[in-house]
Amino acid sequence: MRIEKVTTNDAKELLSIYAPYVTDTAITFEYEVPSLEEFTGRIINISSKFPYIKAVDDNGTILGYAYASSFKGRAAYDWSVEMTVYVAKDKRQTGVGTALYDALEESLKNMGILNANACIAFLGEGKTDEHLTDDSFYFHDKRGYKLVGTFHDSGFKFGTWYDMIWMEKMLGEHSNTPEKVQFGQWTI
Image (tube, rainbow, N blue to C red):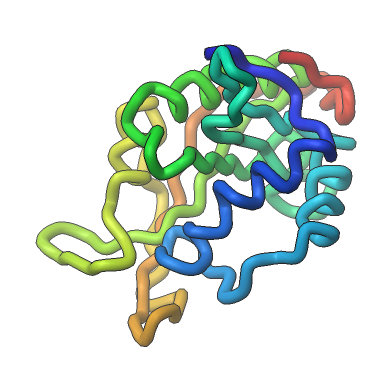
């Protein structure tokens, strides 16, 4: 497996990974699968500032993808990002997500990003649901992300209210004179 930059030529394959998350899970709160044109636009917009990467097998098949996006649109938040990862359903729990996050976090650190944040749909202890597990929480927890907040019953999908949690990981040291973030200057 290798990690590479996503290009707009990957949009159709990435969308095929993402679509079942929209139609079958509460992992994303989108109700409708975006069009190929809209999804391609997302790739262009996000990758102009932040890393947008894919994991590829020896045959060139995309196994999953990850990216960072703006946490908030104000300058004071420049050092913070929101993390996203999607892995092909048949490749989950095979190390793809870990490889993507390792590369993504390293790239973000090199840009000057200090805070990585993850917004996660969450069931909570003892609850079960056919559209959601707490695997994303455990994935982030294992990677050193810490729970910082819960928004109760904040997302409605499939006739169910879901909680939303935020987790964070510090990628670098905070100072009173932080280096300017190098938007658009990312490598893998």
